[in-house]
Length: 437
Image (cartoon, rainbow, N blue to C red; front, side, top):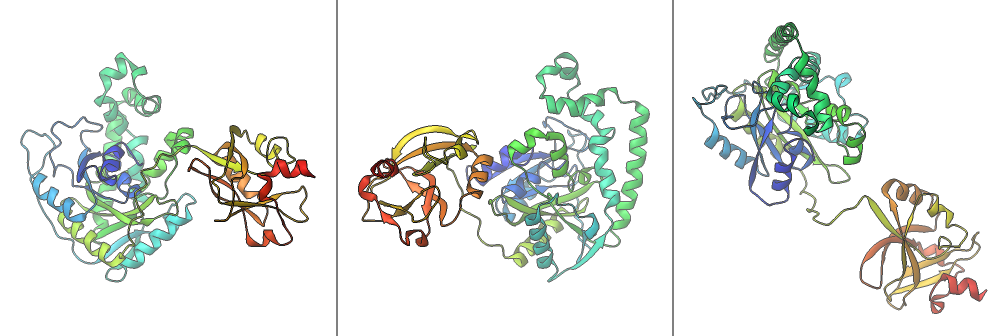
């Protein structure tokens, strides 16, 4: 769901609260917003007080907000922006305009979507919307990417280590092992490494300042892709680094940013763009975001799915895949677990198809039907996918309703399956038909 503040984003996306605060050092106030179809507003450093915040990098941390309406983000900024003399990092509120309608975008050869063609399409669509009223300017983002690498590959890891040094020294095993792997090297960094990093960041910041002479704001993908939890567990550092490709430089280079939706992928995960401007351009960025959302005219969000989800799929089989039948091995070879025998709801008909090897039935929904015996198996998602890929026409995998009213995936048939087929519904199932032969 997108980052260390993803719980806040999910709470808003689920409609539990009207808004939720987050934090953003590397992008955790923006990436969850993208994945959950939300607005994620990351103000300029020091615009909102960080007094009381548990720090990650005190010199970079920002309080952020997730909302489902741009107007709410603007309202919260009006309430929260202002100087706090008790916060050492607070700055007086300032609001500067964006100079014009020039929007910087990465050069095509520098755009990174990590093989995600859906994300690439949605980004191009967002740029096309912006281009109706703005001039898009391709820029060299190499200095921004170099600055981004300093956050986890440079001395700012030492600042993260400083935030938890007592725990790191006293009880390192209490820290999540992936987090510990990232942060622990910071405690051994030399002061010379830190100063060399500061010097290099200052040089990169000067290049970024010059960039604002060519463009007025940036429009980047919030992330180039998204991942399943299981994928992140396999390669947490590498894949989280991919998620920060377009976000990690923003605080280091003292910029403001607002993440907004740019549509949904086929699995309903959100994709977003982030509008980025120089420090104190917060109000102007919110206005720019409003103009973009008007131009984009995005379709309504997919309905919120509050159903329970598992990492496995239940599959009903009615014929050659039953235990002891010729194709049962296609289940056992995939590690399928037997859930048990069952019957369909009483509105199915069963046919023995003509000229199939081995013999196979066709299950067809019919209001003038009967209950048909079947077996239910459970497969992991990858095994289910490979199984479905091997199902030959005119059979297919659809949804079958069981006698208890629940639904599972199962074999169904195209109309052509009934050509020359024998209606064997009266036998109650495939085993009875095979026995009758």
